[in-house]
Image (cartoon, rainbow, N blue to C red; front, top):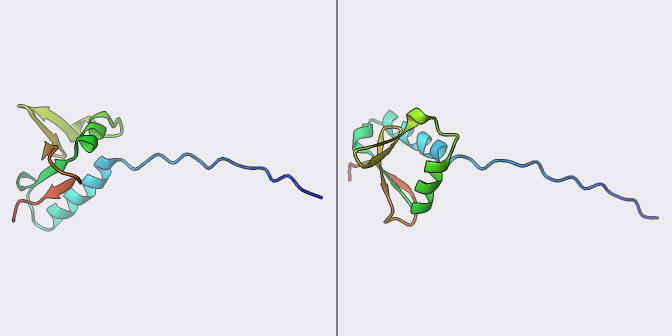
Length: 91
């Protein structure tokens, strides 16, 4: 005799915001003594596009001025990388 087993759909889990990942890295670098003015966030085209469209990012965290994008007051450079990374500037 077979029994029916009800199947439940897994609960939808929203992907973590890329901005939150970068926020943690920026804050850790700042706590280690690096100024946000010295940091540059190099983003893939996809990550930059996702950040621009992410409605979970507070308006105060993302700015566009003088042809420059900034996330959490860190300059953003879009493209030219295979993986997004935070450059601390002290090479």
